[in-house]
Structure formats: C-alpha cells, structure tokens
Length: 183
Image (tube, rainbow, N blue to C red; front, side, top):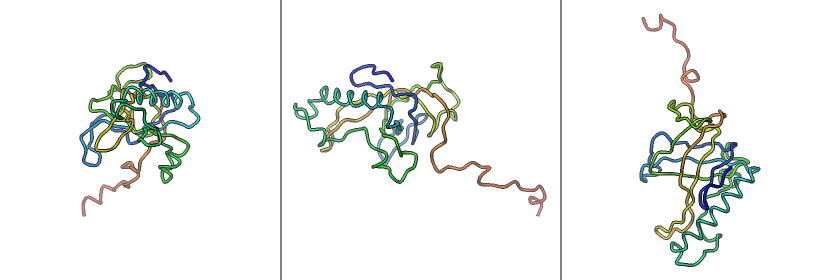
C-alpha cells in the first residue's frame, strides 16, 4: 500500500473487486454512465485502512468550502469506507471486509503485475485480487454531504473465486446428441 498524495491511496494486494465495471461505463440506478467497482478491503489490512482514514480526513480539510467553511462532524456526513459485515450481511463475499464504491467518468488503466496493459477482458473480473488507486474528495449535492471516492487505476494481482450469480454454459446445458437435431 502506498499513500501517493494526501487524498490518494493505492490499496494493498489482498483487495478484491466486486461489481466490476472497469471495461465499460454503465448506468447504475438511471444515473450517468460511469466506470465503477466495489473495492473489498480485508479488515486485517490495517495499513490500507489507516491510509484511507487519513485520505478521508485530508479530503474533508481540502473540501471545507463544500461544508460551509467549517469542519463537519464525521458522524453527520456520508463516508466512503463501509463495513461489509454490517451493511452487506446477506452477501458472503463481503464478510470480513470493508468496502468502498469507487467510480469515474474516464476509464481506468488496467494493468498486470508488470504494469503492462491488460487487453484480455476476462483476466480482470469481480472476485480477482487487485491493487486499486483511489482518490477521495468532498461533495455537497442535493442536501447530501460527505466524502466520495474516485476510481483511479487497477493492477491485477492474482485470480480469486469469481463473485456473482452467473453460471457457465457448461453448467447450464448438457451435450446434445447428433440425432436430437434430426427429429
């Protein structure tokens, strides 16, 4: 984990991707199309968690104008780091993790361990382990105030159990015999 600037954090290597939309921008709940991912951070990755807390504090300081010029009580604003055990207790993949939803209007650069661009889209997916660069910033929109998380770039680290309810064609179908097509 590297803390690159006051509001930017690069996660550790045990971070997993969930709801990964890094290849194509999608509209979530009718909003603008964005590239997005839910970043799962193990609760024992204290270096990344500490760096995120410091970056959130820095984003609050840098965004004081969004909060009327005074520092808000963190309990009264929306914060990006959320507890998977509490907020996603129905999803086994989130158990033992904190999570952050990050998005961007520009596509992330997606690279391999040697920082070479990944061209094969199937290599990066919900469930794989990756490092993610995140940038935190203040917002005040329609009465909602808080700190949001921008999606930077993604570095694939290693494969993981795919997340989601999708099945493969081999799981859905059986082999048809040639004579099944004749009658």
